[in-house]
Length: 333
Image (cartoon, rainbow, N blue to C red):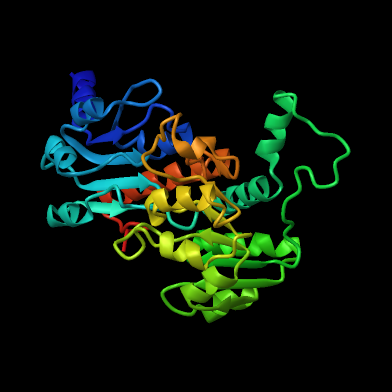
């Protein structure tokens, strides 16, 4: 009878949906002793239909990725849902007002992604400015031109003016790292002047108009909101130097993509490096994939082994906290 009682206690433990089977064991270890873990299966990812099936009756969700967490998902979970721990910095894919209306607590993982996103941002800049993708293609297509003084030349970073839109965790980490390339000026724009933060990187607060007009390289580090959607558009491109490079590791829709294509095709700007775009995944035959002055990566800004694990562990800890009566460590504001 004792063994039956133990089994009953295990069965009655709150269920937690683990939204991806590749979730690191360290994150699972945070939850496994107190909860029943329902791990969605799928190759390479669980389908939405699978998640809708698995979420039924769950008290918490360890969410990875940017698939929509909306009314349909909440209705599928039912009244048992108490917390969503999202392993991401952005939260434009989550229906926050509805979750809060239903009393469901929500967390993200801000502050962790900065170093990884900054590394990739600078890698994209170097790929565009030093034309490494073009160079690789020249090798494999047998178009290498040896001994030519201007072949595959591009702008260097030394002495240049760098502009960063958004001096949050990602923008600040970009600023710290780009300073090591002996740049000339570092300009930034945010909702307000961030004097103490800017002082650490010798950053100069300017308006967006000034930043786009004077920068040789522009990094975008803002979340996607009603204020930032299509922030960079045809009118902005007209103000930029034709030698400037745009790097976007924020969200695709911060840039008007059709306007960007035109700016690249007409050499209104020198080039662009994008880790984010729309739609995602981008069709393999999209015009952006065919432009020699555009470098693309598949939304892998946070994809270091260490950062991804840390994100999922923090998301799991937030779930544990809520379901054991403790406050969220990183509630979404």
